[in-house]
Amino acid sequence: MHTPKPLALASLLLAGALAVGCDPGDAAAPTAGSATPRPTATTSPNGVERLSAAEIFQRAERAALSASSMRMRGHVVEEGEKAELNFRYSGGRAAMGDVTVRGDMQVNLTRIGSTLYLKGNDEFWREAGGPSAVNLLSGKYFKTSTKDKDLAELISFTDPAKMFDDLLKPEGELTKGATARINGRAAIGLEDGSGGTLYVATEGDPHVLRLDAGPDVLIDFSGHEEPVTIGPPPAGQVIDTDELEG
View 1 (cartoon, rainbow, N blue to C red):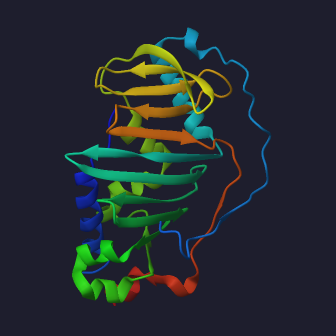
View 2 (view 1 turned 90 degrees about the horizontal axis):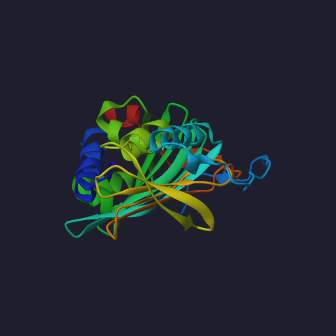
View 3 (view 1 turned 30 degrees about the vertical axis):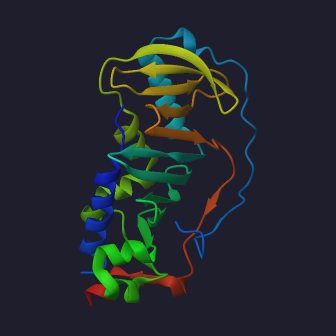
């Protein structure tokens, strides 16, 4: 399975910021509240462990793309650099979350339809554009479009379909691995020879539950079908790209 590289993420975050901004934090974050509850998913055995590895993966992909909501949370370490990921998804329409690199450089991303809001902490903006960037964008959300080519790779984190394709697609032929319990749910591992194991639930819907490639790569997927509502940040905290370009 593909895994994100912290050093590449750091460069990506800064390059995107320079391209569109100055050339999630928890405070004042976009709203994420309750939505109409969906029926609780069954935890009965689903039998996917009897299928081939390729068929299990196909079932998992369909389940991921049809889920009304999901959470992705974990970390990746490369050459001593750690990237932490924490995202919530509301179907394929909306997402919010943050990427933290080097421990203190964080960017929050919120996507609603074709609109993207990006908020970096002061460390992020200082690295991207120096003190002037901090003065301009500290505490602000930068509004742009999901069609922004400068941020294409970063935006992919907010799109479940692109995220699944970029992060979880096998690099080689899949084989079935060991069974395990992942956060309380029975699962079977899928391996592609790259050193990573993708765990798929064998009870309830066959959702992907974890990508595990040792201590340096661990990403969990949870919160499937749990109510989540994602809204835009307060208008007073938003800077539109047109304002900066003008």
